[in-house]
Image (cartoon, rainbow, N blue to C red; front, side):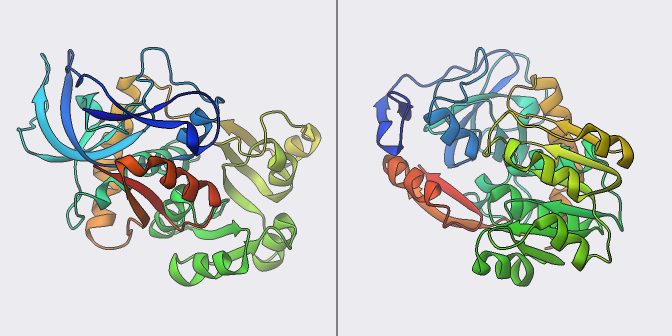
Length: 327
């Protein structure tokens, strides 16, 4: 089968198409003929040499796919059949024509979504739901601040938070993206972080109140600003390190606000934990997609052999929603 490999740390030019043996599904795994794979920031960080796959995971990048079930390993008990249209959450291996994945991490695609577009869903839906709901326990009527409004995580987080009844604030780096966050995605408040202090702007537009929950993909660069933006009893959930891994914060301010800082990662979790998250996504997010309250957004698709072009486009930051590789 064809698969994408990273020849050495670097830019998109280090991605290579290679012929490799097809995977054999192991205990409790299903084999999937991949139709499309989603690009994620973790793939870029792996390409750059900053985010190696967890022990035992494939060196092939790719954390989410859509496709059809092609076979089963021993011990699979989920009620799947050959040919079922599914999505899967992976620890790696998605940029390939086939992938073997624990059955707990596989779901049938939601109603009303085509098989290619479905590849835009599993990683972002699992990340957003597990962090906003399972970790931060976002409640109706609370204010949530979402950084990176127009990326894959941001577009899903804005829509899910709105569906949950939250007041949604979001940040983006251009006026065009700010407009997209409000007019197209439904954010109540949208802030251009390149021109405004987002903590001050949030309070000014939210009746003087900060955020009850912040979902942050930036990390160290935003650490103190995020604490500034928190309301009393607020919860800051850090899920990315685009702005660095080491920062300083005022613990006194955190104490005064009785606030919490939590950091989570989805990729290294064991299959059982991922299975719990995927079941919650099926039960709570798929119905919101089926009834139209959440729309998966695909910015652009590329053939597998144009993985370099796909990463170059992703790195440009021009996309709104997901970038996909199509087999």
